[in-house]
Length: 297
Image 1 (cartoon, rainbow, N blue to C red):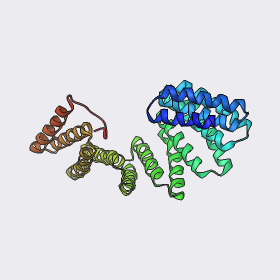
Image 2 (image 1 turned 135 degrees about the horizontal axis):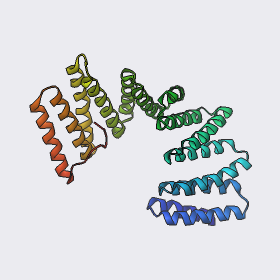
Image 3 (image 1 turned 120 degrees about the horizontal axis):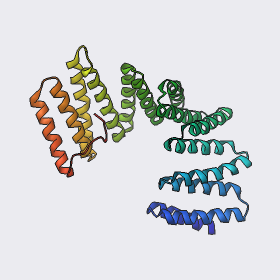
């Protein structure tokens, strides 16, 4: 009963953002689990403690707690938990720029998932490995990982995971210079996020598609540049509308500036002036010029 009361205090502390109290109570829960020899509970509490430290951006402390939990999972031969811990550690190591260690942890998580026939885990760790290779400037190595992860998401009917992975694959295709393939992936993701009614994710992908159309329009020697530019403005306009609905004036200003630059490029000065004026009005409402939120024009 004492441990249940402590865990209630942890939940309340997290709900109110009192991380110090959450850490103190999780430490108490860990001590109680150790005292009664409940290794499974100890491991769970250590994992939760690691996540609190991660929320606080204390990555080294998070890794330390995950390592303690990993020792318990291995002693208990709990392979599924071991894979999850390795994967979480791999993601943190990636964020810290420790790419070789991240690859090692994520690959070990992937091997366990494959051995267990854990398709969901395979897809997650393959996607995360792809992100590491992207960070390392190796999109060609990320490509097959994302493709496999997308196949798994389709098989599992995981629509949100599929949409996110399509975006990852689209980013790789951009890096590899295949804008046509990238557009196809982002457009499919747009359809999924629209069906899921995830407006922030939808706005972000619409902005990216607008950017891609604008980039094609501006490319030296581009054919049908005006048509590409017109399509870009259509995607930008919907992104702008969503940004306003979401109360995101920062992104709204960025989008209007992107539209202004594109209108200027296709020699529509009146439209350009209007877009720049609207961007300035949003900047004024924010108190100062801002940039780069939903899209990165």
